[in-house]
Length: 382
Image (cartoon, rainbow, N blue to C red; front, side, top):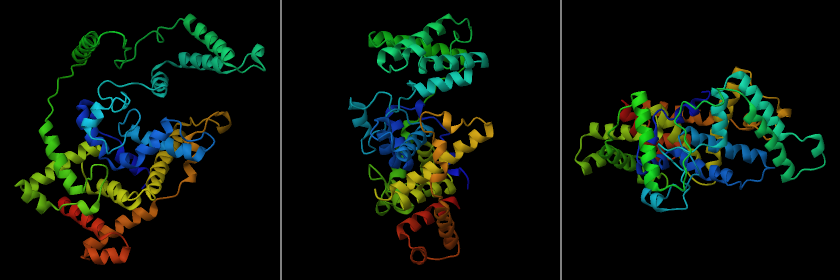
């Protein structure tokens, strides 16, 4: 099953269109967010020593995984409620920034790599070398003044280049905002720009059915055993109990659950996707001591995916030319998840053969509650 996990967590719908409350409520319920947020935050805060390359690679993989899910900025504790998130000034403004997105230096460089013509890319690459390399007169000197001098020379050379491409604007509406201006003036300017872009690109206004989100989250939380900061198999309610308490038919519950799944996970519901995400979560991330196994699986899948992409494009740089570690260097250091996949297949096969939850738990030595949850999803999928 090569790279199927990366495909599972690549968001097909965008949370940026939603109010912050729902962006957060959907994001914090994602099993991958629950496992990766702390490690990704450590990476962004520089808390992992730079000489621990393997730990750095794992933490960076966790960050990339969250970005694949649409998470921007420094992750926060999933136990935080949406109300607390909106009121806590310590939360970085770029976290889950929504329709107004910040850009990292990596994102800006990627934008230029994809958009600029080849001659401009070659010239910019040369200027980066000028900024990074020491001149003869700088030999033996490695201080801020020398570094600034090199960068100033590169910047001055950039300003002399005659290139319409370098002076063109990106296709995406990227703007600088002056924070010294009044909020009212900034809001008016942004509103005007957004309306202009919508007219130019024929983008209609959208109306969100927020009530449907709340109904879906209610069913999801009870069905998956949401605790407010994670999932607990002992808190799961079956469909019959939920239907009775809500006075709703089973088909309505299934529909509401599928709606919540599509927003939380980012793709339409299927039993296969649920198995790969939640079976793995409950088996490998059920306790802090086991969460590394889940992160390891993520990292192996991501590194393998990216390594194959680079080889296909024949763009993988020589390792000797890299001054900082690359994720590709660690693709072979992570264990396989074949055993876990086989276990998932065995559970489904034994259920279909008519074995009871207790019998399957005894045969496979796993939680009877997890088997009951798998059986419940199989029932909905039939």
